[in-house]
Length: 167
Image 1 (cartoon, rainbow, N blue to C red):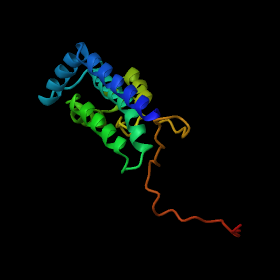
Image 2: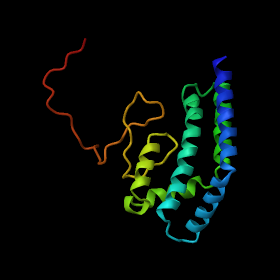
Image 3: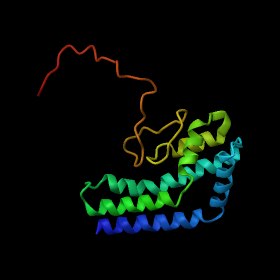
């Protein structure tokens, strides 16, 4: 019963997102995508379109991804959720272009208001945040990824442990 309810919620979210995206947001996204493709610089307002496009996708994809993550790979429902996620990606043709554009942008290019917007969406699994983003690190919050160290820690050796007790 829970799986059916989760499927229905995910389908409603996809339909709602598709309807919302078919409004002016898609037109704005298409205009910004065209500008990126010809190599023009974006204004902070156009970065807002990019960030909202990616953020709305991430918000919609997160419950679907959470359902996938909570199922075993052999569960037939996992394939259904994966198909929903694939359909959502297909309905958002500018994902890769906008991700690449945002990853290359500096904080000064996107503007202070958009930095806060990036930080808002940075914790979602399907939102690729730039290096300068502040990612929430609360592991209890759904959809939040753990923040990785900013530097290579592979050469760090644990030290200072004198006694280890095994119980």
